[in-house]
Length: 239
Image (cartoon, helix red, strand yellow):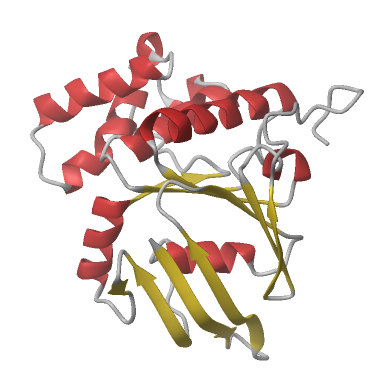
């Protein structure tokens, strides 16, 4: 489903910063993987390229056998809206729209009428246990509730791929476990391809495969046979 060959990326704001140094990676349809690395390792840049939010300098990125390169913003947006759901650390909810309106937003860009998109938004909020919070504004929701709203928004357009950038980074340990359990259920029940970027081993260990990245280079790719183990340590914190 995803094929990267020798992906290079350098930023030129000031002194050149070579972020990705020949990334080769394949992710198959239906895989649940994490990309794990320290701050500055290149993992978020890689995720932005996978999500067609940023271009790469050289190499090849194939998504469903289609070469993704130098797309117009309109074409890139079409691919994103049709193929990819995003979950961010900071939730990225619109502050002046309630939970239902935030979830419904991707369908607005697909031209779905207001009544139908609000009906579907309510269905997804109900699936995630938030139906009674549908008309609350983001500042009235807890961090965990905001992230569940963001997950519902990512799912409503029925994407084939979920890209989650540090999805538990702003959450406490208990809520982090709840969010990762939701992602595991989605993988198991819907067969979605899910890619989680994280610096936390406790999060990465909940996925089926851990892709380690360091200094812009893919290192070990670890098949995780222990992904159902609790990510809590003995003190109740993320390992």
